[in-house]
Length: 579
Image 1: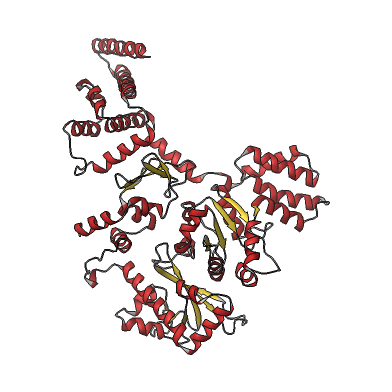
Image 2: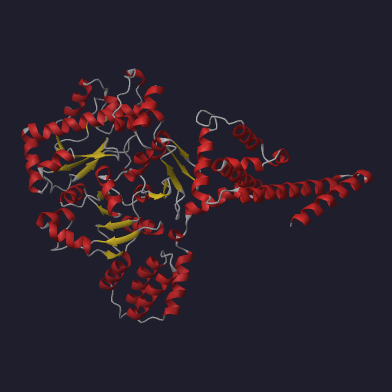
């Protein structure tokens, strides 16, 4: 197994692996970007191709390509190994079937089911009808193959029987979301029957679930137009973006993502050349959707049904995106078409024009609010003001806020001061205006804070500067060792002995500190180390004075108390001279 891990590492570059998830820019010999694991405005996430490692100096996470895939995909090492082996073209040794993980079984079941549905689309009579329906909707043969579209036969256990024949039991098929347990105690029956199948793939193009659309008797009210895989170990609709596997590179390249609401919309957009398109199906934008998108871009173009006056899920998702710093535009439609797929079927050029003329979210709110309400009546002014001020309250830039307040004031004839006062009241109650993640991080920093936290930061800086320029090691004398904690003393001794950091137990720590020195410190470090040593001495003296002060207060023996006071005075004088 170790040899296979090394083979994978030799074939894959950390820059390519991380770069497929995070937008990176070159800085010296390293690359930097916004950390995908915590909310931040300034990039503190670095990738070092030379060391084949990544590190975030904001949240502290870091490691090799396996650690990255574990964190970003939320999987165990075995699943990360399999994902990276596929990327590297490394064939893993066959596992004992009994030891196969639950996740892997579900991946296998979903992929086999997808192949089953694909075959039914081309070979069965009803499947051919379903294919004709797709072609009439404008989806090409090439897209049908690319997106692995299929058909589920209108039978109760056709898929289940097929999968059982491949060695999987019916309980596993239920856990994959492909079958439903019968209430009568009979064998489970297939969830998808007589429907067009849209496989849902994760960012690594693995099948994790399915969307199923009825195409016969679609007008029957008692029949759901779409049904989807329920929550499973693999599939969570609040975490899935349809088409992200095909879109992620184009999103990063264009620094922009088009968001639609349907599977067909996303497919047709890709056909029309807008490969930076994904769909949010069955749910509004969630924090996890936004965390995924943040890896690739800060710019979103929305093609959603929106009610600016309501408190619907779509609006709440947009509010959340704004609060996380996304730049949002809204795409208008042409010719009364309901969705992007219909626009593109009518004219791809119309869709291109719609995307190019997308309005900022604030312009959209203004136009929508003034269309919906009468600006000449007190109630109309109030409704317009409530809608627009809620949006203005999520704008962090004060100058931009003032601009939109001024515009609102001139359009509804209300004094700017009154609008600002109303905005102040609304913002005080607006939860979207708070940086929740930031407050959590600040709380954690406070836990580490104080003299001890500052002391560890200074020690880390000394180690980093020594690793950047080993000659600085000579500045650390024997008398300085008492200033450091035990771990730092151990690291310094290891460096002095010329330890092999590639094999050492502290390899990851040394790599992280070396990277930190490269990205944070331009100087050679000699003057900075002297300053750090002086700061450590200062911290030690202050700690000593605190301890002596406590000892003086608790000492009852007058003779001993006098000695403690003298020692306190000597140390206080030394500290005063340093200051």
